[in-house]
Image (cartoon, rainbow, N blue to C red; front, side):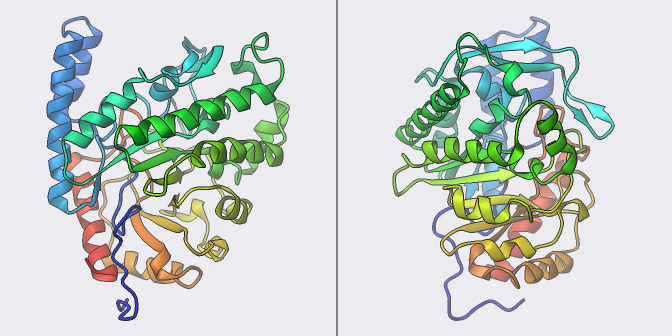
Length: 376
């Protein structure tokens, strides 16, 4: 694909032409330390030292590859979303009878439960996690947190104390306000690149997921609007120099998935009505549908094409990825597109079924392709 001579396609602010979703495979040293900590053989302070050391290593690796934004790999978390949600005010960690059902496998059986009034505290541990990351890199430090939708989507009404929140309008309002405080708190901590991870945006495209919502008493079309209102309440407080993106996929646990279906049912809505600057979207296989929904992308917003799978270690063909970017550019301008993996490499600490070297080769290839297409 020829590079445009009429436009400067190199990005000065996120999302960047070569980017990543967030999580990375946990290193052997980190896995061993966590196992020892669980057995009571390693103190919290000692675990923290190992986390710090391993995060510094993967930050340098990301820098060496050439990524303009780096993450901490979510190395201090067990889940991509629950660790953040468990540390909101009013939330309790509970055990369940069974975990979330993916294709052929279930997650650990635990969840957040709303047992008090929801709020966000300046003591939330993810703020300190971000401060450490920012201090460990000279690049843009990217923070990932779950969207507010993720406290409701999986459990619905039964996850919320009806005595505290007899009216769900108050629940949604409190959750949105908590997230607005979180956005401001991360900004005050120095964060200029924040990502709200939200699998629900893709799940609304799946007939089975929509049926599940209807059977428990939720109207999917009304629910996605509720979620939009919460996201927009949170993002509208961001200053002009803060970028907020969202990431959506169809499930990512030990290289399996939950949902299927193209973005056609929701694309126009999420592009035009959800107030974020960019969208990380999964397009690594036929379950994601075609690129036609990109025709709804408004000017000024970007889509980061998740064309490189994190579910297997097989390295994609560079020319094929370039051809797919060219196909996407038939529906949205090239200067509104970027490239990334389709999801994180380890949405939970178990990680996907590939090796660390395979993970890094995929990220190296993404940077190389982006340079060839967009320059920089």
